[in-house]
Length: 368
Image: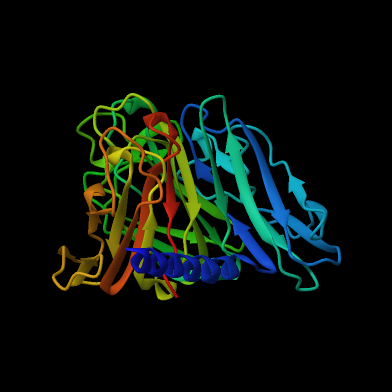
């Protein structure tokens, strides 16, 4: 047992070190997202670096080529930027600005001399909190899947799923397709104003577009029908995902928020390690999304696939597949090794303690 634990630890450290390196970059993009019922009120964006010599980072908003603000960062002096509270139309859009192209939303952080740094967006309210670490240049790509966890709790009026897209070049065409045809999306004040089976959006450099799938009712396709939708572009884009609020388990009346930035399909892997949080089984599970047909998923070194999924399909891995599990107690630190025959996205639902009001979602990096 000791050797198995040591092996899992080595895999985890390898995965984390590989992805941490990808987050250290001279250029970071932060597309906006959409929330419901003030999941975030106070917000701060943190910049840090391992560089001991201070350097300058320029911050830009939307399509503007004029520096919004200049920050100075070093190893001993991290910096912060306050984008504003609640739905500030910079990091979080209002209803009115959702479902349409925006030119004054989203942020870009760039060191003019090429020094590398980290960017972390954090938000909280009296009851919720989450954070997102941008992936730097590793986030840029042309083919993504809309990822997350099923949002099927009981607080329908505040459950929300969103994806935020930011263009890095002019004349960028973005296509979104492959979701459940019964899904609907917000267009301004109309929560179901977009019902097309596929979407085409034209963006210029720095422009953003946020698509929100509010849940609204117990039978809504928006609980999970958007998971695995394809997001493609003819030029590089950056994609954020958010569930503000999220209740992964049916009949829940407690909720939290989750956000993250994802990487494109060509940078994914086939091996993943998951470490449980502090939640009960109903809150602790991975979700695997296929990028190709006939994707076989294996668990914990098994030779027989647990399941086979096709492009855009997802597999919710039972929490009982962790090395330890409990319906009533926290078994933090339990692990799971997953491999797939083809590259997949991996998202983890987890919790901060036994309360179902402490959930979050994490985009998981592949083992290198």
